Image (cartoon, rainbow, N blue to C red; front, top):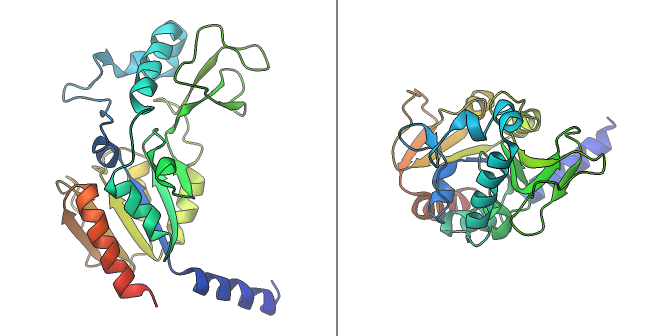
Length: 248
């Protein structure tokens, strides 16, 4: 790449500010009233996970799967972003921010975050059951039996089920490797491959975990700070610190 173009790219990056990558999990959505699917018994709203979140479950009983996600969508459609979501939007005034979320709701988008990567799919989108590249916005909260894609196949939830590839993982890794600051919010770091993203972070950069309890996996990192708080409380405080420390 010509030297003058490299100089211009570096200048633009300096003007835009440092790159902050944020990995969010169920904890941030729970504060907006979005129930976490899985309870302490491993059931999702009373269903075995493989009944409603696997290709096998879809093949066995597609109507059950459609209804399960229709009910989740009906609940989520009225949910509003909380202080944690809004703080991440505010952060964009000072930093180049990418949100990588394990959540399938659209609360980051509702809050106004401009760059959001959904690792596990998007609740308010449907896709073809024969061509994963055919993705559609859902009008309302239902995917009905008999609703088909342009190829004539039943529409399914645009959700990454157990046993399926995580198509956005490669992009998430690329973003993580470029981070100057890395935040982890509302996730136990037990769900893979998302939990493995921390292994792609530059070891020498500042890393923060905000959650109501520390992750069970032991992390011995002098550049890592744990903040014991809900996202709606911890994020606004941390973001004020980051702005004071880094913004010129």
